[in-house]
Length: 177
Ligand SMILES: Nc1nc2c(ncn2[C@@H]2O[C@H](COP(=O)(O)OP(=O)(O)O)[C@@H](O)[C@H]2O)c(=O)[nH]1
Ligand SMILES: [Mg+2]
Image 1 (cartoon, rainbow, N blue to C red):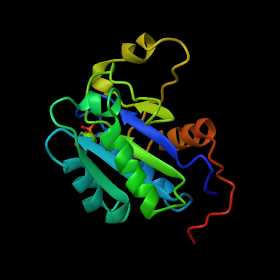
Image 2: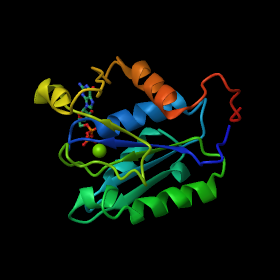
Image 3: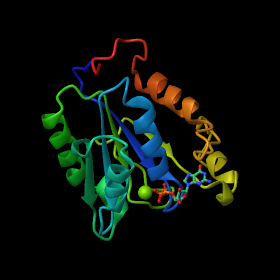
Image 4: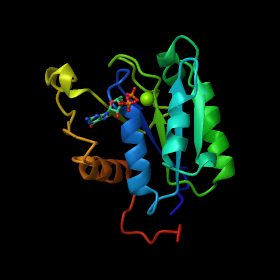
């Protein structure tokens, strides 16, 4: 099902500790049978999130890349997305039939939007303890889903959001075998 436009690129943003990596992990595990997936994580000075995904077995290690952003993580997904664009290009070179690339931001505030050059759709992860007013402050039209990833609750709704809004076809025969 590889698209002439290249893979769908989903940005996963939100504050440090809100659960972005946990979401990346479960999305990979739930979607990898159907889609050809790669995952890119952004960290300031480490590759901890990429290493977490490798240890967890979210995908095979060659499908997981860590970008070290340096001190200003939002710059790497917004003003100068070149490191992330290069990581996406590397994955596309290795896996020409990619359907989906998940890109986790380095953890920043809600104002850290992904450049449209880098991500087609963005999912923001907010810790429930941060309260329910954040999504409404995002303005009308921003849907939100309550999840409990320890029990995979809400995960299917996020997957169907990605498939519907991202234009993936869940009924297409998988090429992955
Ligand atoms: N109980 C519970 N813990 C979660 C959930 N999502 C993430 N966590 C935990 O919250 C901590 C931070 O999650 P992580 O994914 O590393 O956050 P990130 O910094 O946004 O990538 C970890 O200990 C996760 O296991 C959830 O839905 N429920
Ligand atoms: Mg993380």
